[in-house]
Length: 351
Image 1: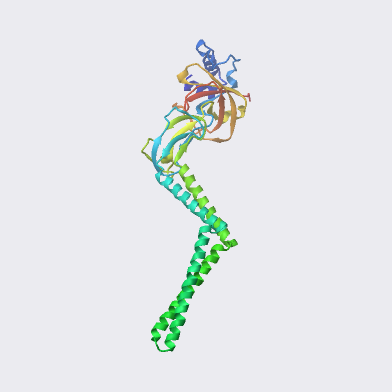
Image 2: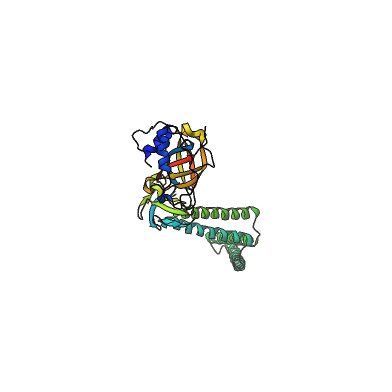
């Protein structure tokens, strides 16, 4: 059917000429006896609501893009490929993101080791080392104290100068300070961790884990996956090209859709909106398929009028007409190209 015939039907469906044209057009032929056609009672021309339509997948077309700016390292599927939800479609260069993940993993290891040290205390070897350091400091202090007393007596007897007594005094004081330091260190090693130390150690571990989770989440965004089970309709980029989420056209890498079921989005003229309802029988035709009819059912009727979405490119077409978007679900075995313009007919209600 030509688009001129559709326009004649839409505007003069109640006239005799339109009735003759539509009746001749809808007369079944041998070529129409296919899986897409069914022997049904032929409605009268005044029952039909006609309008231009566009074939689309049941999922609509989904633009799959990159969430990170970068260079495409690999494109793993071609146009026409059937893909499963979650399947890897492409990969970005991930060297920097992988390094950040390794760094975050190392930071978590350090935080967990520090927490274990705080909770469990020092190892036995560290405790023995601390006690040995205390004993050594005690011996050094005793020796320094003995030397100081001896020189104090010699200075009193006038055998040595006062400077030598001062040096001995300073040495004894340094040895005493070192002994106090080693005893404090040993006590810290032997003591149980305080609550604030445990809390800080736990907080450090949680922070390290959060940073690791963040690094892994960013790394995962270098992988572009299929959002649904479907078919790759279009591949917009090639390996080596750059992508950026700042620009929708630059971020877009694939167009994917579920084509197992097809539907037709129809522009119903505002003069016919009262005659269209969910559940009504419908069919579509296309110039490329001759007289074949592809059966379907109205599954959705829009709730607001808008501008035309589909142009017939006929010189007599009215471009300022307001339309109501209506969806026709085609039979599951229907195979038509996505984006094909068709002529849609709905068996409408009589006014």
